[in-house]
Image 1 (cartoon, rainbow, N blue to C red):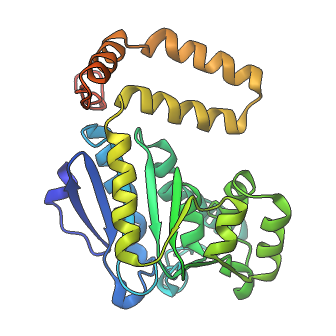
Image 2: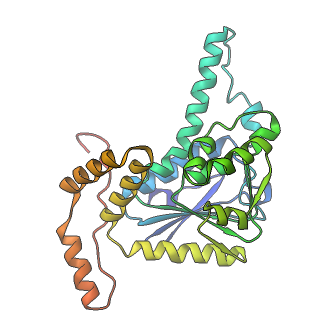
Image 3: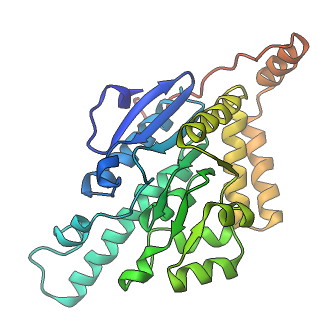
Length: 286
């Protein structure tokens, strides 16, 4: 992975077997989402996905809290304003394009060809909720909590929480959290289905999530990719449309070789050996 050889302000990337471990590294600053965060995250995730060697991506964090959300520098440093523009229409257009840019920074988690698992300790606040709802699965420590902080600072959440969270938990729960800005405990998040499992300590959390990722890594990466694409598609489409989608996918992507490898491995009581996903082509000549 190219990202293994890169130095980032907000992340450290390591290769744990077939798992890409992406760790937020600004724990002393509560892992706030400074301007460089929004550039680095999609760059890392897209690189891992495009290369195709990793079978799963684990996002974790350092320090007491998972992430305190968007850093004030994003609001005050000119990143959301139309520099040199005074005409209202153009200023408003720039605000819209800035929001779309921030949204794309988290859309990459959904678009990645392999599952993205998130390990959450302590506070998961504001933009961090936007981020984790774009992942495939979420896991938390017993002391973790979630807060749609935007309403507490006089704004509407606009980077994915209000669009994705209602697909994960009951709508009434979403509305209560979004209208009140209350904290939701890890236990409550588990009860409503936002997180899959709770761990006592941060160390147990990260190791437990890596273990789940390693289990995923023993499966056919092509079958896993197809499963992720199908589940994502079904979330936003009718059953009939989704059945048509998977039929078309299977017509092009079904791989008997992987099935044969799986059956042989089961007969020999061992893990199968599957080919990696092919690297994503960047153009006609690549």
